[in-house]
Length: 198
Image (tube, rainbow, N blue to C red):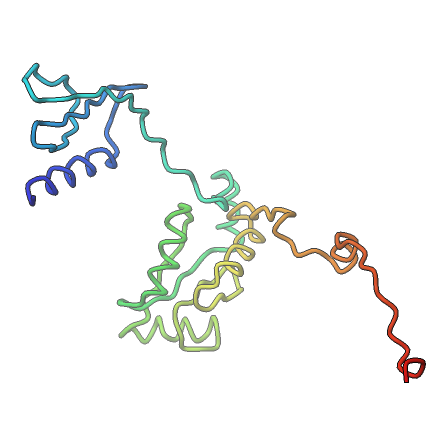
């Protein structure tokens, strides 16, 4: 049973891993007499008790760029000249790592300043922000404390580093007049006259 699970796990890993394949390749699913399933790129031998099925495999697509990916490189360099990015961090800070990942994923140029055990860098942080907390991303003279993706995207878009995120109209809440217009009219029954029935 463990062998069968191992074979299935290895086969699944092979299918899910990014393999360099031609425009379209053939993968063979082979089931032996014991029900063990394997996947291979060559046709199986004509052994008795083995079933096989040819599967057409499409190559994996390259990962998509973030929706708020950097604008062209010249605009990024121009933004870096007018509003440079400076990331104040300390080691072992998960939020610092998240901010660093956000910037690296978009290939944005920034200076990272480690303020742990460095009085000069701590003074620089205090002069830039008026505070002693990290992470802080300075976008020019504007400090962004912590990781608030919405504020981060807005500030970087305003500075010219990334394209602003498109907000689909469907995601916007309807206004009161729109929601009232969408509701069907309701009929109201007249209130019973309690004086007439007494």
